[in-house]
Length: 94
Image (tube, rainbow, N blue to C red; front, side, top):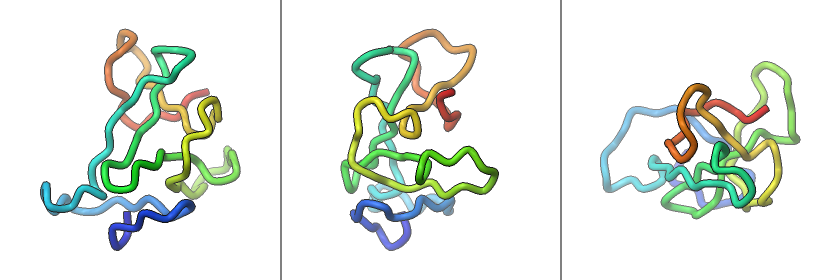
């Protein structure tokens, strides 16, 4: 998160890892409540989840952090080919 932002709607950026003193760079996969194949990625600094802004399916769409909407498809992530319960690696859910 740019500048360690904890704001809803803040853009997610790729950045060189600065280590454990920057919790804004760490994300925890959390199983969805309705399907163990899908996960939310929760930012350890803000407690917010990753989502695609406006449910966009366009190339280059913005990825932001937002409050968990529980069943919002734009916040669910899956890693194809892994058994249920394994952590995702940045693949949006269909």
